[in-house]
Length: 138
Image 1: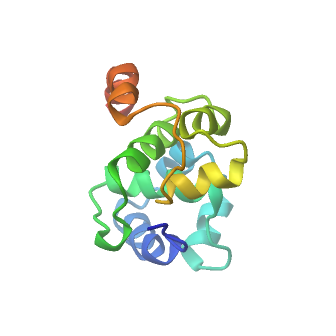
Image 2: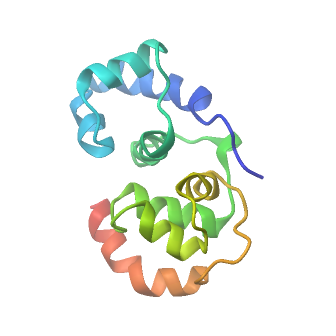
Image 3: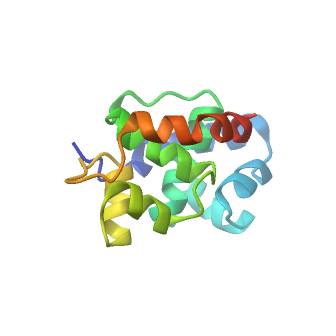
C-alpha cells in the first residue's frame, strides 16, 4: 500500500514538536529546508512534499512520534531511512536499489509502493548500510 498524503499526519506532529522544542532549526538541518519553509509547513500554508516530506517523516519518528497510519513494508521503510539520513547519496541511489528509472517512482516506493524488481534485497541493504545508518542516527 502506498501512502499518498503523509503530510496530513505529519503536520500535527511537526506543530507539536515546534511548540515544545521551540526550535525549528533542528528540523531545518535534518530536512535541508529554510526556517520560513518549515514555518509554512507548520501553518499548513504549503505542505512538505517529495524528499522533504520523507525526511520530515523520519525526523519526527526520531523525535519520538509514532504514526500508525504510516506503516509501510520493511524494505520500503529501510530504503526511505537510508535516504532520509543521507546514507545514500540521493534519489539516484534509491532508484538503483529499487530497480526503477524515474525519481517519482523512487519517492512512491519510499512511501510504500511495492517495488516491481528491486536490485537488492532488504538483507543486502542492511549488510551494506546498517553501520553507517546507526552512525547517522546517533
